[in-house]
Amino acid sequence: MRIALLSDVHANLVALEAVLAALPAVDGLWVMGDTVGYGPDPADTLALLRERQAVMVAGNHDLAVATGQGLEVFNPVAASAAMTHRKWLSAEDRDFLAALPTIEHAGGATIVHGSLRDPIWEYVWDARSAYASLVAAESELSCNGHTHVPAVFQLDGDRVSSTLGRGTVSLVGRVLVNPGSVGQPRDRDPRASWAVLDTEGRTVEFMRTAYDVAETQQRIRERGLPPFLADRLASGT
Ligand code: ZN
Image (cartoon, rainbow, N blue to C red; front, top):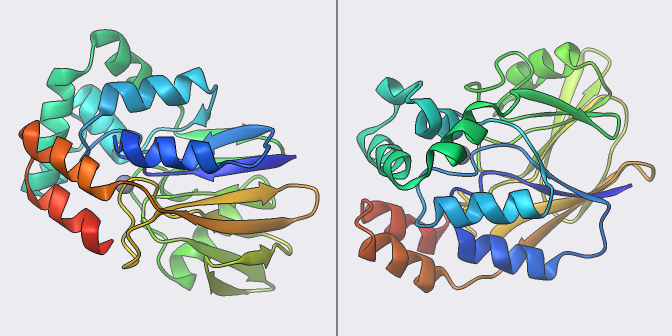
C-alpha cells in the first residue's frame, strides 16, 4: 500500500489543499493529529480530511480545542488560538475531535501523535524518547507527528539511529516515521511537509509542497488570531 502521511495540519486549509493537489495515487491518508489549533480554517480543514476518509488520531491541540483538556500547559498564543477554535467549531466537530483515538492501527502500522509512551504529549526529538516509543509499539512500523520536523528513527539492536526527513529513506526493522507538519513546519523550510509511505517496499519518501503562505497569513490576521501565528509561517519556525 502507498499511504500519504500528513500531520499537524493545524487548520491551515491553504497548505492542506496544496498538498492534496500534489498527492500521487495513494491507497489512503493517515493524519497523525493536530488537525486544528493555530490556523485560520479549523472547520473546513477538518471537513476536508473527513471527506477524504483520512485515518486520524488525536493530538494535544485537537483535545484542547474539543474539551479544553491540557489548555493550562499551553503557551498563551497556543491557548488563545485553541479557545478561539473552540468557539468557531460546531458541537458536532468538537465531539468528533474528542472521540478520536489516541492510538490507531492501520495497514499493519501504529499511528500516534506524540509517542507510544505518551500518545498525546511526548515529543520524540532524540534517541532516548524514540527508543521508548519503538519498544512500546505493537508493530514494526509506527508513524507520529507533534515535533513539526520530518524524521525517521530506526531501532538497531539496542541503539536508535535517526535520519533527517529528506528524500527517500529505506525502513529496516522497527521504525518511527514523522512526516513533519503540513500547516506549520518548524525546520526553517516554510513549505508544507508530508510523506508517502510504501508499506510493502518499506520506504518513505519525504515531500515538500509550496503553498500560498501570504493567503494563510492574511486569514490569520483578519480572523483575529494572534499575529505571531501568521509571522512564523514565513520562516518555517
Ligand atoms: Zn502540532
